[in-house]
Length: 592
Image (tube, rainbow, N blue to C red; front, side, top):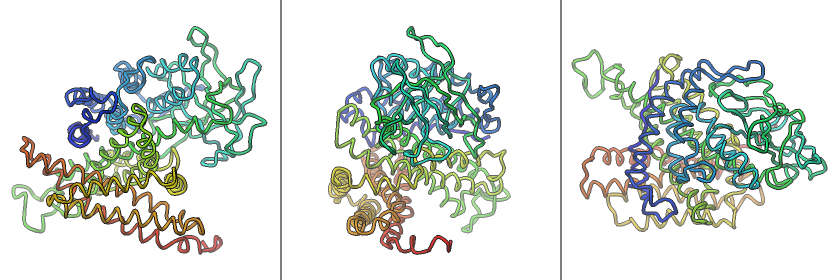
């Protein structure tokens, strides 16, 4: 059975050595000293390792089952959910007035990575609840907040998001679910939603569905969509539960992975719903949840890559196979361990350099969310809005690729279920699809985010990279291995952006055909920036004297690998972008 060791040391390095969170000035960050964050991460890590990890294979093999309208979760899930709930882990960063602990989002993100790495399917139940609670917090009335948020913060009630319908996925303007106004101010919701994660289960007393639907007579298309709160059980004025609402689970989807999460077809048969936010402004309210969810999904890509890497590394050190070409390294054994072979090391370093760079990228993004929310920082809000599709799209693509590399390290055993490696790949695969498929993320990045505020935020990113390089150009220890590669890749990114500006208006397909490559180019530059920043910190630690030389030396060596072996992909992506639309569009449909 696969194991999992929480990477708390690396998290502490990013939080305190690189980001210096307690010194940042962001409201609420002063309390994030190393002792405090260390205690939180240590306890969360124990829960992830000892409680959630053993249930991961249980959820995968048992799955969920629908019995008389009730979904039964895998053995041990409900008891584990009760334990997580009792520890207050479901509401780390929600407001205290609703039962949360009001901790910064960055700390909740670090905890979320460990929980997802240990058991992604399980963690989705509370993760989606958090997103639904955030949408109610941002757009709900005072009464709605008082009614739903305390129970959702504790996960006594869980939450969902209902967008997709059988005939429409990304194009939500085509949805048919109707919301008929009632005399008492409520609405009758009728329609069917599919792919609803955590849509029905036996671990909470109530489930609060957020449902997109159209009010008859409203504008056509996406402009006519509204968002509604539709509880599984009606809530009485005193907060107790009343009669069952007209919402039910029609079936559980049979999926490639995340078997422990109940992905449901949900039927709404005149169910009572309550408008959340304004009429016909449903997408604005839902995007509060979707943007948070997209960062969480990016984190899932990292988390599965981390868990898969840990097990592949252990296997590579333990499995004896062949001899090193430079001479025997295990003379007392019949063969050398796999890790002596260059190609195995390549596979492991691809994983290690991605995981550590992506973790820094994710936590940096979480810091921007805290600055935008806690300090009302518009620049931070603009930058994280720009980077959200990169975090979601690039990190889940790469995360899945890393689980495949980890599986490959095992050879034939990686393909055998008893070793558990296929689960990481199967669970990681969905992250490339849900919360907006990665192709849509790339279109959003190029079609909307680049030009937002007249390109202010992407220009700010370029300036950030340029400033970091200039401030450290006299540091010979960084220049060749980190700053020069970063400068080159940043120029590739700028050239790609310039290509879109020069060609996008006269031939939109030229931009759209290159959008996926641009998303990956951008992702590599972001992780390159993270590695340059981490390298600077590691050099300083070694120069100033440290009791943990091995850790900081490993950082530098891993970072050099990324800059020399992974970052050069930016040149390839630029070349593809500059080839324009013709290679993609010139083949007639009937000739495929």
